[in-house]
Structure formats: structure tokens, C-alpha cells
Length: 334
Ligand code: BT5
Image (cartoon, rainbow, N blue to C red; front, top):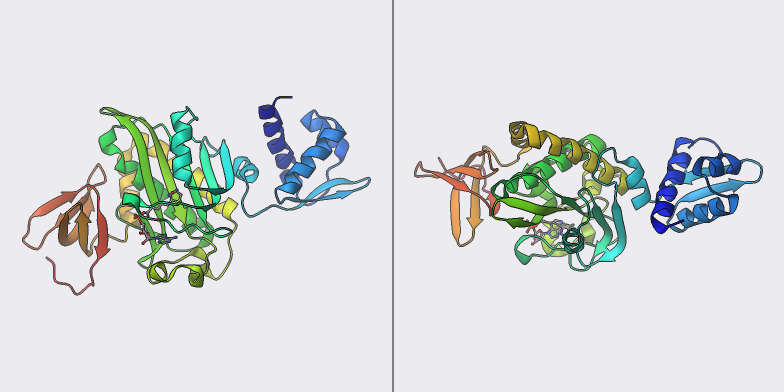
């Protein structure tokens, strides 16, 4: 059997085990369903065990799935409903999931391929900044997309990803995740995560885009470096509970799948969802964009996802990218 179909069979095995969570599945039944010998089944069961799946074996009864690891490619693949996450590359450690995803996309990896890592050596933010990426705690993933939109509309990909993350996290953890323009996921103005969009494009089309998503999930505040601790948060900090990363990853991918389809047909719907989840609109802000700094009231975003700012002198500025700080509510800006 070639490596690829063997890989696929591994997933089918997990699907079978997940379906019969409460009881045992006989070895004969499983080998028949998978079309493999009992010896091959045993090998595959052991391969899953090696990845942290706990599978009980009982003579005469068969196999039973007791627990699944916190993060695994196999369970993500069985949990996604659409194209995103049907192909998952999971690594314990990588320099940057975005760098690897860009390389794979360059080599023709299909749309929806996800690169995910338990930790990153050189996790990156925008403009060469660092993304703190310790192991056993958080989500660091990159999704390859081949969107049929113009390069000038690329910011919409950041917005739709932020909306998908905020909605999925709210639904799965109960945390009121909001979006700070343009790429931050925040909870009560503290940074929970960030999105980094990179792409390869020609003047009139995007060849591929990579959406990098970093979310602090099970990280304790004391584990953050001192400089980040003051303004960051995690799902654990907000809920006092640990959350299974695989569930959150699959939830986000499913949400993104649906919302990307909506973006294609009715971008206005996504823009409205963004507005509803925004922590930025209606507030006085300072935006640094390149060498310029603007202060004003964030009134809206336009159809390309640019921020519309009303400055104190009454003029209107449209800003396509930058770093935004929310000013204290009493700062007088008209
Ligand atoms: C971002 O950049 O917010 C985008 C972060 C994207 C990270 C993901 S992880 C998977 C994928 N692979 C990568 O290599 N990157 C992506 P920016 O807006 O530039 O914010 C960066 C700033 O956030 C840093 O300068 C720190 O101040 C702060 N920061 C760093 N690590 C953080 C963390 N874990 N939690 C909260 N804030 C952090």
C-alpha cells in the first residue's frame, strides 16, 4: 500500500473508534471495515497510540478509544466538515508555521492545507515582530488559501479570519472575544491572539494567501514574558479552565470554511459581522501607519476593510494598515 492511502486508512481507523466511543469494536469488524489484515490493524492501533491516543485492547472484545491527545492532525482531519483542514501537517516544533505554509504553497500545496505546530522557534507577528510561541499551550497554525479576490481586497481575508476565530471561540469557550482593527483578537482590550496574512500575488490576482493564526489557549499569565503579560490574555486566564486545542482548531476551520463562502457571495455580510464583533468602532484611537500617526474617532470600515477615522479637525481619513491603540475614553476627540 502506498504511503498516502495508508495515511488515509489511519484516519478511517480513528473515525471508526470515535463513532463507537462508549463500547468496544471487535478486531474482525474493524479489519473488515478498513479492508486490512488483523496484523496491519494492530500496527495502526499502535501508531495512533504513539501519537498519544489511549486505546484499550481487550481479548475477545476488541478495541476501545479511551482518550485522544490535546492536539493531533488525525483528529482535526476527522472533525472538519469542509475543505479547510482536510490536509494537516502537524509538527512538534517549527520555525514559523507561516514560513512553512508559504513554502508548501509555493510548491503547489492545495487550498485548505493547514500547518500547525505545538511550538515555534521564530513565531512572527507583523513587521518582523516576534510571536511568543511556547509548547503545550497554544494554537499556532497557518491556512493556505487560493482566494479568487483582488490583491487590493486582501485585508478582507484578515477580517474574515478574525470574525471566524472570534465566533468559534465564543461558541466553544463562552469567552466574549472581540476584534481590534486590523488583526487582533482581544478580550476586554487584552490581546488573546493575532492574525498574520502573507501572500504571493500578481498585480491583478492573488496566487495564494497564508493566514497565520496565533491564539493563547491554555497559557497561564505567569508564563508570559513580563513585557507581554501586561497586555495579553489567554482562554485559560478568562475561563480558569483548560480547553482542548483540537476542538478549538476544528471549530475555527469549520467557521472559516463557511464564512469564506459567504465572503465570496456577499462580502457585506462579513463586514457587518466584523462591525458587530469589533472592539474598535465608536472609540477614540491612535493609529500609527508607517511614519504617520493619526488620532481620531474610529467610525467604520469600508468595503476593503480599511479603517475610517474622523479626526479632531473634522476631516475623514481612510487607513489601510497600521497599529492601533485605543485611547482612554475621556480623551477629547470629536
Ligand atoms: C500579530 O502580529 O498579532 C500576528 C501574530 C500571528 C502569529 C501566528 S502564530 C502562527 C503563524 N506563524 C507565525 O510565525 N505567525 C503566525 P502583531 O500585530 O505584529 O503583534 C505582535 C506583537 O504582539 C508583539 O510585538 C508582542 O508585543 C505581542 N505578542 C507576542 N506574542 C504574543 C502572545 N503570545 N500573546 C499576546 N501578544 C503577543
